Image 1 (spheres, rainbow, N blue to C red):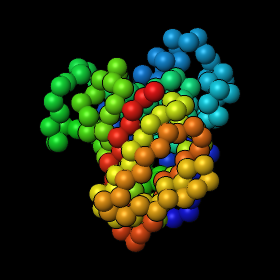
Image 2: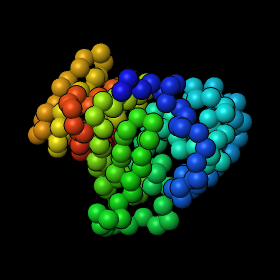
Image 3: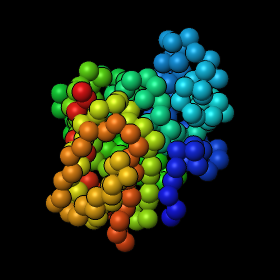
Length: 202
């Protein structure tokens, strides 16, 4: 699979029946834009995401990719977990494994599980990520500048590029960083890679 960029990965494979989480997410994205009094055109200029993609995401006609959500989180000053927690009905102190929210970027082969109980005010959170063999995702900016991340590989191999330096992580390896610019996550082996991402907001 070729490297997936934010621009190339904006839209998935055509129209599909929206998932419930996509409907709630689309509604929340529309609310955030309305709270700021921005038109779709203004948000497109601020985020670098096309007006058409923004409109379709708000109407839940498409499921936004990880790269698109990352851009919107940067504009709205939220981490992805914070944004996704805002579409949950009630924050909980304990979330069983079966109830942890799972979100998929179908275009790039990325599956994201929110391990931490959702809460919009959390500074720290745990996320499980899984990249299919060959998957390659590039983020052009952090959702929050200076975001602290600890990436612990559980299975497989991950190539993590930060500030033009690639770090290859095998099972058991952990990389700590603060994110100020572009990053890239690439499955570096022939099988899926699964990793735990600990995120701490500055």
